[in-house]
Length: 510
Image 1: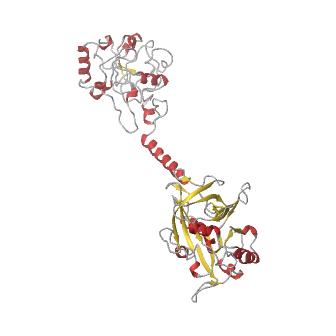
Image 2 (image 1 turned 120 degrees about the horizontal axis):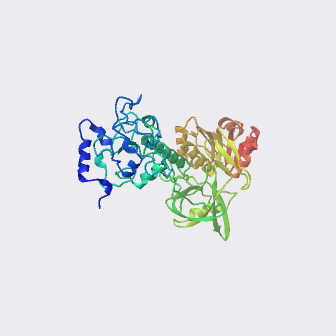
């Protein structure tokens, strides 16, 4: 059933033809029908066609103004300076109706006089300013009358449709998507949208969003939050059985040990982690304990892996095997090393850790914890000295790899590596490669008990002169690390360091 306010078909046809009449041009597209009985009750029929000259024209307004209406019938202006003209799109808005109870829709709908003679003397034409999207530097875009729905409903807002969502937005203040009181407000970008907030440039909002997401992702990556690696050593007091997946004895293994070499009495043992996504979870500077029951006795030994948490799915250990009846002072040999040498692929051994009192946080920052409950002590080191003997090179190698892997870490390193023979030097290829690629950051020096004829390095035990020549002098920003067999630590390293003035806080022994 047609709405009574819709009008007859002839009046509709008259409306369409009138809007296309000569002289109106595109201005006619901006006029809306508002001749309802309720509007007429407000006395809006007194409004007429605006004039470009005469008393009705206002200074500073480029559009023709309406004929003045009687004071009793004129609606209150929300923006007195607003231009009110036929086709201008800017009309006085009734600011007192929104929220005051005087009609639900008139509070934010602007009204102005339309072209005379289109639909009777009492016809008033209303334009909704919120329909336009006014932007600085662009002409006003007027919606076409052809977009109006044929389903018209009456009311103070006129016969054109007025969705409930937009009606609610008007009650909150401002027109539909607009709320501009004047062209100056529109050009200044101060119009308010549906939410009552100032409009923002979509391109600017998009750029800010992209920058924010980029910064967030970078922060998460820096903190390793994005990494989904699982940690094997979850609890330092728990023992984790790990299977042997590969064993290499006394021969080079460049594919498994990065650029390194193992000697004739040394083995590389690779143990598998719970999955290929697992890392061992060992902080740089720490070590693990291996536990095995041998002849009914639980034997525990500490070892530093040569792999790191960047290696997923496995952990590598390089261990020197001490066989029976080789060394006169140790006729039984090494219990845990011989146990490892007899292991077959698939056999398991218990790992426990992390253990240790030294933690390296990068860029020369070392943290010491003498006991688990003690407060950490921090020291910033610019030059790191290392004294290693035999397999004591493994904790040094852990630090060397960590420092040289990051170009931003400028910590200097000097190493004295003691062995019995040239064949006993572990990881020689990798150490000399680091010395070649980092000549100003890494200094390497050897000493052998039984050197070859053409040996160009030192011979014999580590001496005071050797330390003075190849390691950093005592100071606040240096640190000496010592790891090796007891004779090297007790009879060579510690006594000579004390003679040269190194204090206890300058020396750390694994």
